[in-house]
Image 1 (cartoon, rainbow, N blue to C red):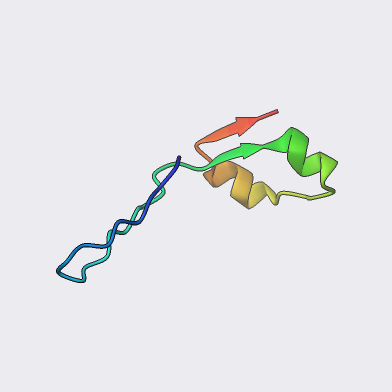
Image 2: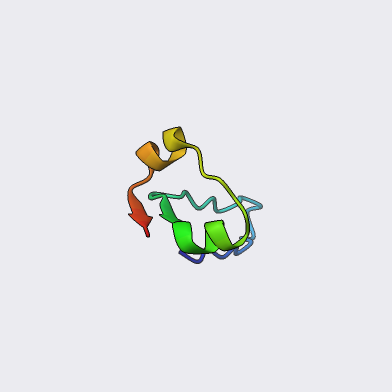
Length: 48
């Protein structure tokens, strides 16, 4: 999901919200990261 910030003349900011959490375990493992099971349970999608 790409988000862009576009300033408006009124000075208001546009805030993008993350609507889904996707975790890719292969790159995480390659980087030596351990994803807690509580985070995996909250993820909308887990890619193995």
